[in-house]
Image (cartoon, rainbow, N blue to C red; front, side, top):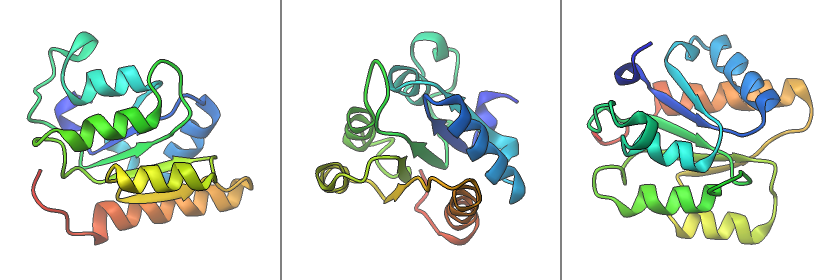
Length: 147
């Protein structure tokens, strides 16, 4: 897969959660164009076509970003803030998909411009269903502005 074909950017440091997320997206035939990055620093490099991703065309942005909050190097809130602060990336829908249910994380995410905040269900089947529904809604039902 070329990076210009990415439709969903998954930002998740937990390999098990990443695998479950991709399995859920595959269930809805949405997994073919998913790029997985393992921390916030790598996410920023990918989105802004810098560092290891400097060869990527910065105009080829994902159509959806699934973002964990608790990550090494750069946390999800900082990633969200940087995405929403830039004119060319501000319109990308960002869904926080996290185990955090803390009110301050929810409030701060919305203050920074998150499009949706979803707490990861603990049960396997509930997790798969939640991510499948998210992928279906954001990729097929929602009508976002052109990025």
